[in-house]
Length: 265
Image (cartoon, rainbow, N blue to C red; front, side, top):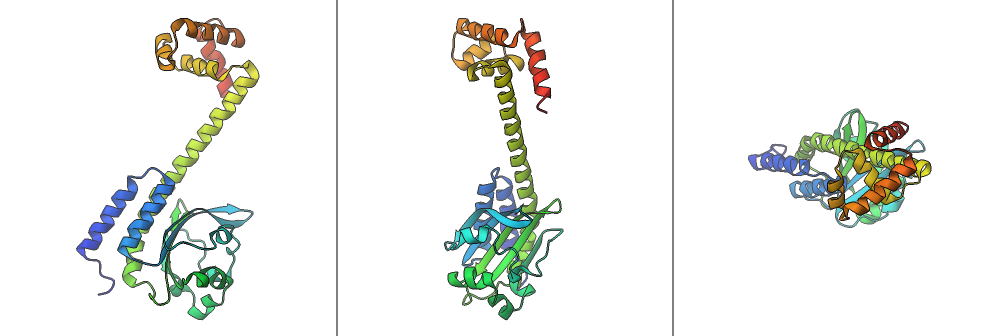
C-alpha cells in the first residue's frame, strides 16, 4: 500500500523528533526540520515561515529555504498575497493541519490566481504539501514543500509522514518561541531598569555592575576576582556607589535597589 509506513520510516520519524527536540534556537529548528523532511520526501524546494499578524493581515517572518533557491521572497513575506484566492478554503486552523493544495483547490483555479502566476509558476513550482503548525490554538509556523509539475503531486505517504511529524514540530516551535519572547521581555525589563538607575542615581555601567553584584550577595573578594580589579579599587567604586545612592551599607543598598526594581515590574 502506498500510504503504508515501514519500520525504516518509523525509525526515521523517531530520529527526526529526537533531533529537533534537542535544538534550542528557532532558526536552527526551521533548518533542521526542513532538511529532515526532504530526506523523507525529496522535493524541489522546502520553506519554513513564522507567521505574524500586522495591520490585520498575516505576514511571514524568518523565512528558511532548503533545496532550490526561492525567488520573490520579499514580495511574498510582506503579506501581499495573504488574501489571494489561492488561499481561500485554507481557513484558520484550530489545530495543526497537513494537506496538499490539490486536496483543497482545483488545479485550473489554482493556476489562475495571482500567487500562482507571479510567485510559483516563474519558479517552476506547481504542487505543494503544507503543514500549518498550531500551538495553544495559534498558528506559530508554516511548512511548505514544493514540486514541479513534471515531478508530480505529493503521495498519500508523504502526507502521512508530515502529518505524523507536524504536531511534534508545532509543540517544539511553540515552546521555542515562548522562551524567546520571555528572554526578550526580560532583556527589555533589564534595559528599562538600568535606564531608571542611570536617571535616578547616575551610576556608570561599571558602578551598576558592582552594585548589582552587591545586591545579589557576592562578596567583595568574589566581585574583585571576577572583574579582575584590586580590593582597594573595588572599595573606591563602592564608596562612590553608596554616595550616589545615599546609603551607608549593603542592607540599605539592597532596600534602595529593591524599591526601584518594584517600579519596573
